[in-house]
Image 1 (cartoon, rainbow, N blue to C red):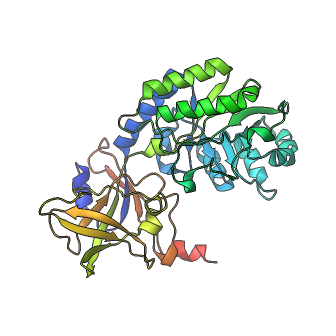
Image 2: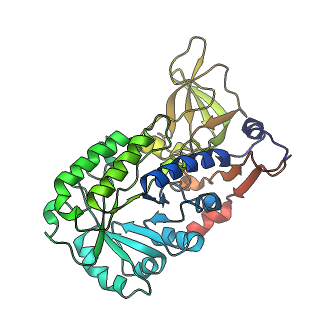
Image 3: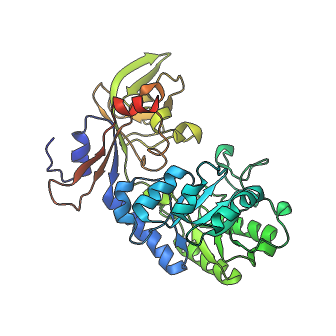
Length: 391
């Protein structure tokens, strides 16, 4: 493949394999926005690996965001190996078999319940470095409309409700953690904080830090970052605490597409389906779980006079592996490129190999790099990746 690309469009036209294509310039743009919030608010901002853990990009990130939030031993080890022993850990269920990974790799550990805290507190105290301990609280308030993503739905297993906390926190609990947002704005955070303060006023004055979780989509167009900064500063001053945020999507928001191709066009009951060489179920699971309709470059999602209606179908055998409601100016043909926008966050971290379908390549495009070095494939997946998972 020639390597003298100038524009992303040039590159995409020459890609013949499914590819997650990270645009480094767009990532740097997001980092500038997040870093401004960090500097102006005084908040500590962590990269949430659950949304974006592409370690090849950490060199761009770690100068201003050298810490990650992790929720599994594998994430903790990834953070330790690439960012150092300073990760913040939270898991609904730590286990005896691997808790030593957290005590080795993390500077902060948050517990989901008092029972988990009691079980592991002495192991934390015996670590060779100080570990700041916290408890996750459940404010019983969230504006997240999809229960699958709502940590405060009735009966949630996530976090401790106010009625279950002792009036005085244990001496070694230094922080509280709450998470109840999902791709939310500053107004949503303001309302959430009001709910937290109403229920947990007694305990906020007993801690050194408060982690407000993720879901702060501060890099989305129209997000009121000035209001966010004001909210964070006000809270920190009121309660005399270090405020911590752990966004994931905000880092990788609109930083690149998934490039796919039409492999067949079928028609049934007057519905034309363009079958792609990628899967919504395997490679873009949030499109079916949330659900939401991803943007497709050059396509409309409302009927247009003279445009042709298509369903986009994935290449797994799951019947529901498709998204309806796309309109194209010209017919789709075998071999055509279909560019699914904003597919860098919550994709590679959630993909499956259902049906043995291989992952798309992971690549980076950096328009600021010297000519000939603007495109780099970070990972290609093969049969060996599938076989190694199966035994």
